[in-house]
Amino acid sequence: MAEKACRPNAGAAALNFFRGRRARSRLPGQQDFGAPRRTYKLAATKCRTFTGGIAVQVVLLKDVPSLGKAGEVVSVAEGYARNYLIPRKLAEPVSPGKLEELQRVRQQREKKQAEMQRRAEKVAAALKDRTIPVRVKAGEGGRLFGAVTAKDIAGALQRECGIAIDKKQVALPVPLKEIGTYPVTVRLAPGVSVTLQVAVLPE
Image (cartoon, rainbow, N blue to C red):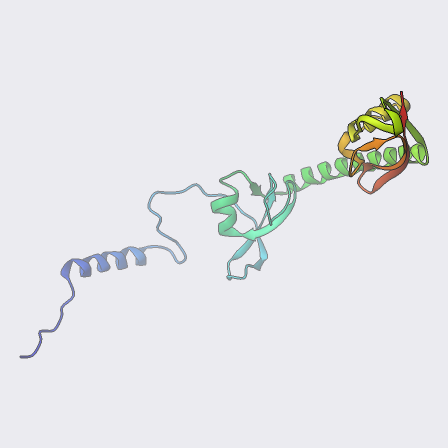
């Protein structure tokens, strides 16, 4: 007996017909996501992403791993900017006013960094080859009742030279546990460090 030809389900055919009419009623490139969504005005660049989409420029409001730091202008896929970065307030669209503001902030930051660099170099010149005494309790044989730490050296610099630094700026691999003089490096600023002598003396 010959098998009957399989006919398409009437309900499925009607649904496909309705979808086809709705798809034809949309403009080219328009997508149907149901309820209207908030839109953002993005300035497209002339380049395209590796997937063929349009790349846009945004300014980062916060640090984004593998993308950039706050204040940087980066190019990303339009969908990534519209659907992820901007709604989460990680970035905002680039505008002429925003670019001018970023330029002013960048210039102020560079000026401040240059001033800090000059001060650090001046302090480094003053501390070079200088000996900083640190007095501690010690027993026989020069063994200390404790140890001299980075915090102790930072405090000695404050007392002896009036220079306030954080203990993290003192490069001290291990605490000093005996009487003697030790070379210690102090990091004053990025790219600026000085090696001074720390004299551990008994009280």
